[in-house]
Amino acid sequence: MRAPLVYCFPQAYSAIMITTRANPEGLATIPGGVILTVATGSRIVHISGQTGVDAEGNVVGTTHLDQSRRALQNLSTAIAAAGATPADVAKLGIYVVNYSEAAVEALINAAVEVFGEDFPVTASTLIGVATLWQPDLLIEIDAVCVL
Image (cartoon, rainbow, N blue to C red; front, side, top):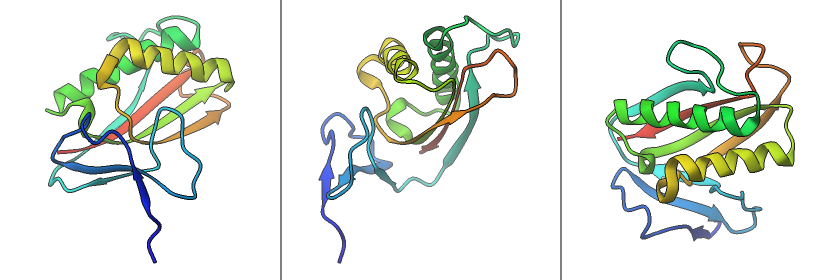
């Protein structure tokens, strides 16, 4: 028997390709996200991890807030380049160096700054890591979009 689903944001996300964003009953909810997304599109876009670097590859800022803001701006640019919108994001992977509640708060604040009402509320995984590919990086975010 399938577990009942608690549907999230039915009007806010009317994108045709992602048909369901839900939290199954019996599972703890994820602040700022959902447990599952169901998509029916025919194109899948995988976006490599975006970090807090500028177009020349220079690390921007030394705080989780500064780098989250830039990583999310870079992610937004990649989403648009694929012909997608934040509503098309089916999955986010978020990697955080020096994970803490303050780091997560900085990430959420940056997401609201960058995306506003269009923040992609979707299935996501947040992973605390020891280091990323460049020594000064604090955050990396990858995404899967369905079009």
